[in-house]
Image (cartoon, rainbow, N blue to C red; front, side, top):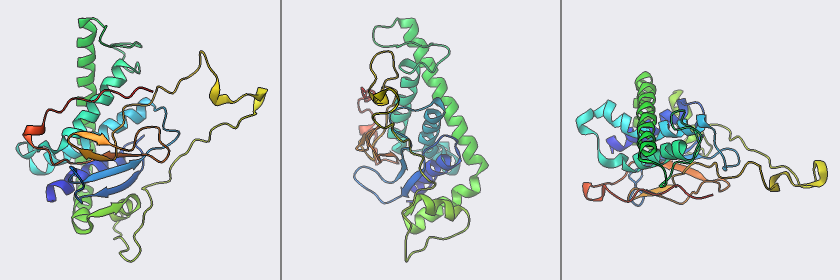
Length: 265
């Protein structure tokens, strides 16, 4: 339980301290399915496109759990529980490089199965660079806020589940109100209002075709519940959807599930 608490506290703390990260909905160390614990975030905006800043933040939050294990228990005690986090981070980093044109080295192009061997090698190097830099950023955050990591982990051990608001209040020295538990997120959610029909020119701005901005910019999204290394539920783009990051009950025998492909939009 203690290792799971620090793992989830690592996710939550990186989410709180990273610019561009979605607000925390809930952090828990109560086992569910194949997950030993979980931090859930609420998707902001329209859920159909994300900025580079937001995607980098998502990578960092993915790394927070494993980084916390390493900082607290040492490199030799890092567990296999972060396998799903690593899968999700790798999927997103690869999509950033090969689909979204967010690598200066590879360039603005689609790099797929038809690409040359040289391009594929460049993609692999860029994916590795993104993940390595993300791990370093998450480690910097948790080393800088080591005291807060202890506070949050101990809070999870004591209360088992904390809402986003309770996470924030706990770090301010305020204990949760056990008679009336908060269900609020860590901060107010930013929403995007869709344009109304019948606007300027009498057209619906969301239904233009040809030469416009498509809805294919949504990065691969984990689901809510983690089981056997894959996300379940909470698909990207769903209104009110959540993102889940958690420590798995992952044995070496199940360490090599097929890597999911990015969802087509």
